[in-house]
Image (tube, rainbow, N blue to C red; front, side, top):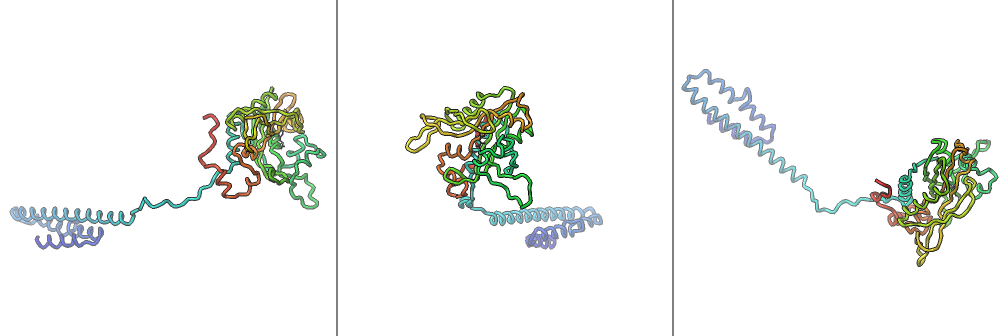
Length: 353
Ligand code: DAH
């Protein structure tokens, strides 16, 4: 018994790992372990023998069992200590540098405008940037010989020789989306269409690609008064201050009557201030939709009437955020983008909610 005890206690403390320890346990206390076999022999003994040997065996079994458990816990603790040492982390180290982009002012302002118009019940409509000349011009009552076609400095898509399909153009304005939205949704309808437009033009205030936002509302009794209210409401929300507007009679082929709209402003030490003073700044074109345009969109002009407007998004961004040069918008200069860009979490919150 004493031999057994010493042998197994030595083996337990000498076990190198959990697997070895388990082997020792099986060898001693397993079903066919040495101690278990000895227990079985108790049956052949006399009652007196059985009492002393049985008691001693039981004590030995308990002692080995306790030793096994203690050794197992010690091994687990040691393993955990090892792991904690290996996985130790210095949380005071400086964080790894992460490149963070900004939201482009055009994207931000598009969101702002969309949110304000959404609040007034306008949904967003879209159209392709490559348009047929019918959508870009004819459907908007701009006939082939109309001088507006030249004024628009249009980019035409390439046509191989002998390809006589009518030309496709890069849309020169967002107005063709009016036609597409009317065809898709019919009347009544209230939509805006922000997007890219293209004209062959390049100087401090013009880029060959820029952005417009189109607006259109058609119903039974829409009038210029609704147009004026919507626009004043928009400018006031956008600039965060009451902004007076001035409607000047103008001409667009797709509206009758037509008006160019100016907003109140002043120049203080070379800085533009919107919503104060007695200066005026032209910001958009608008009017009551021409009957021919309604008809081109599949809407009966004897039943319905509507207003439309179009304004430059880039221009709106320059006015609100004091950005001086339009060309910089599209140069992808990181210093400019970091300076004028917006954080991803500065999403517009002007809409109700
Ligand atoms: N499409 C015009 C342009 O690009 C702007 C415009 C004027 C749009 C009057 C309209 C409108 O919807 O009614 O210059």
